Length: 419
Image (tube, rainbow, N blue to C red; front, top):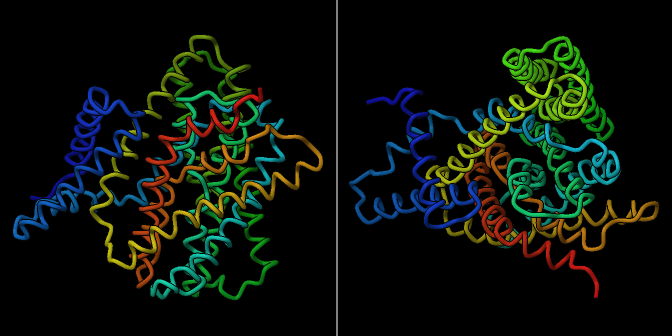
């Protein structure tokens, strides 16, 4: 019997509630990480049962249900816009401005440096293992794994205390670099697939990048201002919440139609509303209901996303070489993250000072998540897609589970006051 969309959504809500309850009562991990760990464990149990009893096909229905969700389109063209806006609402604009140079440098130069570092080292390392991957596809892997995931990062920041300057860098970078990373990824994949962009030179690529990123930021600023004016003229919280919902969906849709960065547009709009809108265009009642609505929506979608990340192991095809390449990719990605953080901050340190110990915190706090998995799933069909997806998934799981659970320890040690 074919499952309807309602059946799939009902199953997801049921699993979120069940796994959330188990995590709260038994594992007591941070909510999102706990959901992903339990979902991953459940998926591995299904795989083990089918391995022992090949005729059982126990994970077939689950895989079919996941196929109806279409993870990459669901995240990139649906959930992401709401999650980014919800996160951007809580960004402190003065703190963001104080760290703007660092955030901009890490979100642009840092992403590019990381992309080329991962691409080059992965191409050499995978080739050494016997995994034949052309350099341009290794570069595509570098592009999709370099941006940090704002959902994962902001979720971790809710559970720990870090200095305001460091928190602004981590949160601001995670919100902006995914938009930049998606633009870099699309350009690299277009070149790899031999599309119309294949003949573009470096200056053409830079111009295309500037148009996508700059156009997205400009669109977000304009849309945010228009929504701000609408909110300032109203005093009805139900309608004002609808205005913000329209702001997110319409802005993202217009960005796609104009071929500019939708994630950057939504982030800029969210920061505008979260600061100017909350301070000057809302009554106390509206402020309480609107922020509460977006916080609840953020928690629901965040839970769904991490559940899906755990279950996606069912669609990942892993062989011995891909497993070895995944183990090699983890230190490569961490090294690239270190380069993408330390070089921009070192250059900027000539003009301004930074919190001592900020680099290791920024490196270890650069979690990868659903965006990287979605981009890997969005790769065109071909011999490179399966190994890149398997490697990406392994890096994401390591990032969320290992880095996420040890981040508090790293923060306490790296930022420990000197005696």
